[in-house]
Image 1 (cartoon, rainbow, N blue to C red):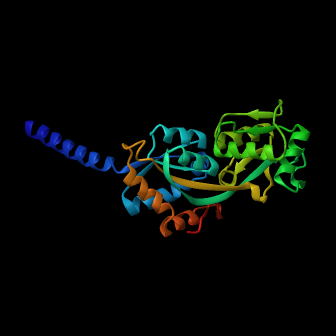
Image 2 (tube, rainbow, N blue to C red):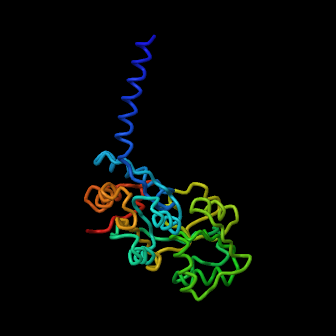
Image 3 (cartoon, rainbow, N blue to C red):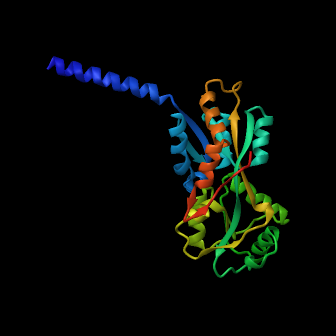
Length: 268
Protein backbone atom coordinates (compact mmCIF):
# COMPACT_ATOMS: atom_id res chain seq x y z
CA UNK A 1 0.00 0.00 0.00
CA UNK A 2 2.82 2.41 0.92
CA UNK A 3 4.52 1.70 -2.40
CA UNK A 4 1.29 2.45 -4.23
CA UNK A 5 0.79 5.70 -2.32
CA UNK A 6 4.39 6.69 -2.95
CA UNK A 7 3.95 6.01 -6.67
CA UNK A 8 0.70 7.99 -6.81
CA UNK A 9 2.28 10.91 -4.93
CA UNK A 10 5.38 10.88 -7.14
CA UNK A 11 3.24 10.72 -10.29
CA UNK A 12 1.01 13.53 -9.10
CA UNK A 13 4.06 15.63 -8.28
CA UNK A 14 5.52 15.01 -11.73
CA UNK A 15 2.24 15.91 -13.40
CA UNK A 16 1.96 19.02 -11.27
CA UNK A 17 5.48 20.14 -12.21
CA UNK A 18 4.74 19.58 -15.88
CA UNK A 19 1.52 21.57 -15.57
CA UNK A 20 3.26 24.43 -13.80
CA UNK A 21 5.99 24.52 -16.42
CA UNK A 22 3.49 24.85 -19.25
CA UNK A 23 0.93 26.94 -17.39
CA UNK A 24 3.17 30.00 -17.59
CA UNK A 25 3.23 29.84 -21.40
CA UNK A 26 0.02 31.77 -21.92
CA UNK A 27 -1.04 35.36 -22.27
CA UNK A 28 -4.31 37.07 -21.43
CA UNK A 29 -5.68 39.01 -24.38
CA UNK A 30 -8.28 41.75 -23.88
CA UNK A 31 -10.24 41.99 -27.11
CA UNK A 32 -13.63 42.71 -28.60
CA UNK A 33 -16.83 40.69 -28.72
CA UNK A 34 -16.77 40.94 -32.52
CA UNK A 35 -13.54 38.96 -32.82
CA UNK A 36 -14.93 36.37 -30.41
CA UNK A 37 -18.54 36.20 -31.68
CA UNK A 38 -17.42 35.84 -35.30
CA UNK A 39 -15.36 32.76 -34.46
CA UNK A 40 -12.08 34.36 -35.58
CA UNK A 41 -10.13 33.35 -32.48
CA UNK A 42 -11.27 29.75 -32.74
CA UNK A 43 -9.87 29.81 -36.26
CA UNK A 44 -6.49 31.45 -35.72
CA UNK A 45 -5.41 30.83 -32.11
CA UNK A 46 -4.65 27.10 -32.59
CA UNK A 47 -2.29 28.08 -35.41
CA UNK A 48 -0.46 30.59 -33.21
CA UNK A 49 -0.19 28.10 -30.36
CA UNK A 50 1.08 25.40 -32.72
CA UNK A 51 3.79 27.73 -34.01
CA UNK A 52 4.90 29.15 -30.65
CA UNK A 53 3.63 26.93 -27.83
CA UNK A 54 1.92 29.97 -26.31
CA UNK A 55 -1.74 29.74 -25.29
CA UNK A 56 -3.95 32.84 -25.62
CA UNK A 57 -6.75 33.28 -23.10
CA UNK A 58 -9.24 35.79 -24.49
CA UNK A 59 -11.31 38.18 -22.42
CA UNK A 60 -13.93 39.33 -24.94
CA UNK A 61 -15.58 42.60 -23.93
CA UNK A 62 -16.39 45.96 -25.47
CA UNK A 63 -13.40 48.04 -26.54
CA UNK A 64 -13.89 50.53 -23.68
CA UNK A 65 -13.81 47.69 -21.15
CA UNK A 66 -10.80 46.15 -22.90
CA UNK A 67 -8.94 49.45 -22.52
CA UNK A 68 -9.79 49.51 -18.81
CA UNK A 69 -8.63 45.92 -18.28
CA UNK A 70 -5.32 46.72 -19.97
CA UNK A 71 -5.03 50.03 -18.10
CA UNK A 72 -5.25 48.13 -14.80
CA UNK A 73 -2.59 45.67 -15.90
CA UNK A 74 -5.00 42.74 -15.98
CA UNK A 75 -4.16 41.71 -19.56
CA UNK A 76 -0.89 41.08 -21.35
CA UNK A 77 -2.06 42.23 -24.77
CA UNK A 78 -4.78 44.28 -26.43
CA UNK A 79 -6.59 43.84 -29.76
CA UNK A 80 -9.41 46.36 -30.32
CA UNK A 81 -11.05 48.54 -32.96
CA UNK A 82 -11.03 52.21 -32.00
CA UNK A 83 -8.01 53.81 -33.68
CA UNK A 84 -8.36 57.23 -32.04
CA UNK A 85 -8.83 55.60 -28.62
CA UNK A 86 -5.80 53.40 -29.25
CA UNK A 87 -3.67 56.44 -30.11
CA UNK A 88 -4.78 58.17 -26.91
CA UNK A 89 -3.93 55.00 -24.99
CA UNK A 90 -0.35 55.27 -26.29
CA UNK A 91 -0.18 59.03 -25.66
CA UNK A 92 -1.23 58.42 -22.05
CA UNK A 93 1.64 55.99 -21.61
CA UNK A 94 -0.30 52.74 -21.30
CA UNK A 95 1.08 51.18 -24.49
CA UNK A 96 4.36 51.50 -26.36
CA UNK A 97 3.39 50.41 -29.86
CA UNK A 98 0.35 49.93 -32.07
CA UNK A 99 0.03 48.19 -35.44
CA UNK A 100 -2.82 47.84 -37.92
CA UNK A 101 -3.74 44.14 -38.01
CA UNK A 102 -6.92 43.72 -40.06
CA UNK A 103 -10.09 45.47 -41.13
CA UNK A 104 -13.63 44.93 -42.27
CA UNK A 105 -16.64 47.24 -42.16
CA UNK A 106 -19.80 48.12 -40.29
CA UNK A 107 -23.21 47.40 -41.80
CA UNK A 108 -26.65 48.78 -41.00
CA UNK A 109 -29.20 46.08 -40.27
CA UNK A 110 -32.95 46.46 -39.96
CA UNK A 111 -36.38 44.90 -40.51
CA UNK A 112 -37.00 43.63 -44.01
CA UNK A 113 -39.95 45.99 -44.54
CA UNK A 114 -37.55 48.91 -43.81
CA UNK A 115 -40.03 51.48 -42.43
CA UNK A 116 -37.39 54.26 -42.51
CA UNK A 117 -36.46 53.46 -46.14
CA UNK A 118 -32.80 53.14 -45.14
CA UNK A 119 -32.00 51.05 -48.22
CA UNK A 120 -32.60 54.11 -50.41
CA UNK A 121 -30.04 56.27 -48.54
CA UNK A 122 -27.06 57.67 -50.43
CA UNK A 123 -24.77 57.81 -47.38
CA UNK A 124 -24.50 56.54 -43.85
CA UNK A 125 -25.44 60.01 -42.59
CA UNK A 126 -28.62 59.91 -44.70
CA UNK A 127 -29.43 56.42 -43.42
CA UNK A 128 -29.13 57.44 -39.77
CA UNK A 129 -31.10 60.63 -40.40
CA UNK A 130 -33.89 58.58 -41.99
CA UNK A 131 -34.11 56.35 -38.90
CA UNK A 132 -34.31 59.37 -36.59
CA UNK A 133 -36.89 61.11 -38.78
CA UNK A 134 -39.09 58.01 -38.78
CA UNK A 135 -38.57 57.46 -35.02
CA UNK A 136 -38.01 53.84 -35.99
CA UNK A 137 -36.77 51.56 -33.18
CA UNK A 138 -32.97 51.48 -32.99
CA UNK A 139 -31.02 49.07 -30.76
CA UNK A 140 -27.74 50.56 -29.57
CA UNK A 141 -25.10 48.53 -27.78
CA UNK A 142 -24.65 51.44 -25.37
CA UNK A 143 -21.59 49.75 -23.85
CA UNK A 144 -18.68 52.00 -24.89
CA UNK A 145 -17.48 49.32 -27.30
CA UNK A 146 -15.68 50.12 -30.53
CA UNK A 147 -18.94 49.53 -32.37
CA UNK A 148 -20.84 51.79 -29.98
CA UNK A 149 -18.21 54.53 -30.33
CA UNK A 150 -18.47 54.26 -34.12
CA UNK A 151 -22.28 54.39 -33.95
CA UNK A 152 -22.13 57.63 -31.95
CA UNK A 153 -19.83 59.11 -34.59
CA UNK A 154 -22.35 58.18 -37.28
CA UNK A 155 -25.16 59.97 -35.42
CA UNK A 156 -22.90 63.01 -34.97
CA UNK A 157 -22.04 63.00 -38.69
CA UNK A 158 -25.78 63.05 -39.38
CA UNK A 159 -26.23 66.04 -37.04
CA UNK A 160 -28.46 64.04 -34.71
CA UNK A 161 -28.48 63.45 -30.98
CA UNK A 162 -30.37 60.15 -30.62
CA UNK A 163 -32.87 60.51 -27.79
CA UNK A 164 -36.40 59.28 -27.27
CA UNK A 165 -38.27 56.05 -26.75
CA UNK A 166 -37.31 54.86 -30.23
CA UNK A 167 -33.60 54.77 -29.25
CA UNK A 168 -32.77 51.87 -26.92
CA UNK A 169 -29.35 51.73 -25.22
CA UNK A 170 -28.86 48.14 -24.13
CA UNK A 171 -25.45 47.99 -22.48
CA UNK A 172 -24.74 44.60 -24.06
CA UNK A 173 -22.40 42.90 -26.52
CA UNK A 174 -22.89 42.59 -30.26
CA UNK A 175 -24.56 39.18 -30.24
CA UNK A 176 -27.11 40.03 -27.52
CA UNK A 177 -27.77 43.39 -29.20
CA UNK A 178 -28.55 41.66 -32.49
CA UNK A 179 -30.85 39.25 -30.64
CA UNK A 180 -32.71 42.19 -29.09
CA UNK A 181 -32.93 43.97 -32.44
CA UNK A 182 -34.40 40.82 -33.98
CA UNK A 183 -37.00 40.60 -31.22
CA UNK A 184 -37.88 44.31 -31.55
CA UNK A 185 -37.74 44.55 -35.35
CA UNK A 186 -35.26 47.36 -34.74
CA UNK A 187 -32.44 48.90 -36.73
CA UNK A 188 -28.92 48.18 -35.48
CA UNK A 189 -25.33 48.78 -36.52
CA UNK A 190 -23.05 45.72 -36.52
CA UNK A 191 -19.59 44.77 -37.62
CA UNK A 192 -19.96 42.63 -40.71
CA UNK A 193 -18.19 39.60 -39.20
CA UNK A 194 -20.64 39.22 -36.31
CA UNK A 195 -23.60 39.76 -38.64
CA UNK A 196 -22.46 37.05 -41.06
CA UNK A 197 -21.94 34.61 -38.19
CA UNK A 198 -25.25 35.55 -36.49
CA UNK A 199 -27.98 32.89 -36.79
CA UNK A 200 -31.08 34.32 -35.09
CA UNK A 201 -31.90 36.89 -37.78
CA UNK A 202 -35.69 36.46 -37.79
CA UNK A 203 -36.95 39.46 -39.85
CA UNK A 204 -33.63 41.34 -39.93
CA UNK A 205 -31.69 41.94 -43.12
CA UNK A 206 -28.70 44.00 -44.27
CA UNK A 207 -30.05 47.32 -45.55
CA UNK A 208 -27.09 49.67 -45.97
CA UNK A 209 -23.36 49.19 -46.57
CA UNK A 210 -20.45 50.57 -48.56
CA UNK A 211 -19.97 54.12 -47.28
CA UNK A 212 -16.25 54.69 -46.59
CA UNK A 213 -17.06 56.02 -43.10
CA UNK A 214 -18.15 52.47 -42.19
CA UNK A 215 -14.54 51.24 -42.43
CA UNK A 216 -13.61 49.23 -39.33
CA UNK A 217 -9.90 48.96 -38.43
CA UNK A 218 -8.49 46.62 -35.77
CA UNK A 219 -5.18 47.26 -34.02
CA UNK A 220 -2.84 45.34 -31.72
CA UNK A 221 -1.08 47.18 -28.89
CA UNK A 222 2.03 46.33 -26.89
CA UNK A 223 1.41 47.39 -23.31
CA UNK A 224 3.81 49.55 -21.30
CA UNK A 225 6.62 47.70 -19.55
CA UNK A 226 7.16 50.74 -17.33
CA UNK A 227 3.59 50.88 -16.02
CA UNK A 228 3.12 47.12 -15.74
CA UNK A 229 6.47 45.29 -15.46
CA UNK A 230 4.70 42.17 -14.17
CA UNK A 231 3.05 41.40 -17.53
CA UNK A 232 4.30 38.74 -19.93
CA UNK A 233 5.75 41.23 -22.38
CA UNK A 234 8.01 38.76 -24.21
CA UNK A 235 5.14 36.36 -24.89
CA UNK A 236 2.78 39.21 -25.80
CA UNK A 237 5.31 40.55 -28.30
CA UNK A 238 5.42 37.16 -30.02
CA UNK A 239 1.61 37.31 -30.44
CA UNK A 240 1.77 40.94 -31.60
CA UNK A 241 4.45 40.14 -34.21
CA UNK A 242 2.74 36.92 -35.34
CA UNK A 243 -0.46 38.79 -36.15
CA UNK A 244 1.36 40.89 -38.77
CA UNK A 245 3.68 38.12 -39.97
CA UNK A 246 3.00 36.25 -43.20
CA UNK A 247 1.67 33.29 -41.18
CA UNK A 248 -0.66 35.47 -39.10
CA UNK A 249 -1.91 37.44 -42.06
CA UNK A 250 -2.62 34.22 -43.96
CA UNK A 251 -4.48 32.75 -40.98
CA UNK A 252 -6.69 35.85 -40.79
CA UNK A 253 -7.34 35.85 -44.54
CA UNK A 254 -8.19 32.14 -44.53
CA UNK A 255 -10.83 32.48 -41.81
CA UNK A 256 -14.25 32.31 -43.44
CA UNK A 257 -17.86 31.75 -42.41
CA UNK A 258 -20.23 30.28 -45.00
CA UNK A 259 -17.46 30.74 -47.55
CA UNK A 260 -17.19 34.47 -46.85
CA UNK A 261 -13.96 36.12 -45.71
CA UNK A 262 -14.74 38.26 -42.67
CA UNK A 263 -11.45 40.01 -41.87
CA UNK A 264 -8.83 41.38 -44.24
CA UNK A 265 -5.22 41.59 -43.03
CA UNK A 266 -3.46 44.89 -43.51
CA UNK A 267 -0.57 44.91 -45.96
CA UNK A 268 2.88 45.16 -44.42
